[in-house]
View 1 (cartoon, rainbow, N blue to C red):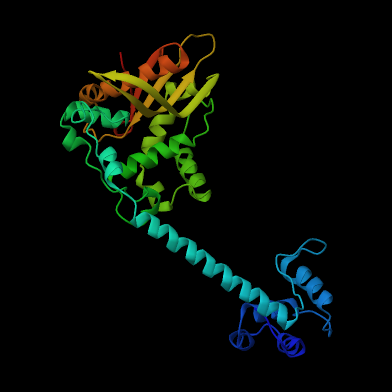
View 2 (tube, rainbow, N blue to C red):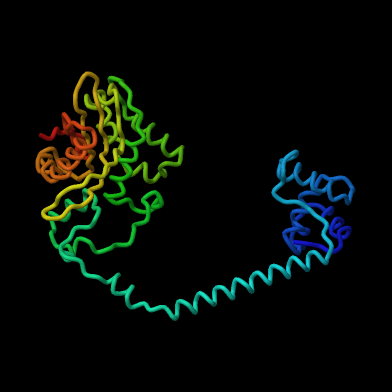
Length: 331
């Protein structure tokens, strides 16, 4: 903003920061002036005003303020605005010239290149695919059905008060274990599982509704086991271990990407332990064997990725089924 009557503006600003005065402001300059002069002395010195502004508003006394008050002749203001208008006119002329060049451009060769049909295009895998998508592809071989683009879902962290589905509950459980700090305690209580969720809500990592969606027994069942104690004593722990590997699928090559829930290495051993968390709904422990077979292909891909990245295959592979609080080793 600007003013042509400095003394008049100063008097208006010196009336103080009050709702009525703020409502009568004609520009942002009036607001800035009111705040800057809220505790100032009766002076119309521009240098004094700027010093007061630094101290009372920005707290930047002795440093360069983000805003400053300057006196400029009207002729300079008019010249600056004229130059700005000329610059905008010149920009508009350049844009118009570009649009004319585009209208004269021969699009046919470019269109032909973009629409070129490549050999084996119909049955070709994507250049990069996730482990989950690769698993679905084997279950449902039709490429047309598998790779229909779907809109991205809203992050589950925004669901808060809405009903939490199985997929969101699984994501929240993984988030809890991702932030878990492992320790070598011998026994655990339900209050400790609750404490972990409360810490994550206090840090803003989870909302209260999402934390409550995960049963405490899922977390306690994970902690109160020998496997948890093994992890706590590990010499190396990798949570959410990302990987990308090249893989031959039939006649095609593709990049397979994924995230391994947990990988850890114990002292004085060769090869680490691969762990995957599952939140499948199981009616009982009798359904665990069938669930392991459903996930075997995914685990074998994870094991291959570990071997290629680490140089040695995993020594053990484990699944933790949260719904029945059971660990299962995969052979």
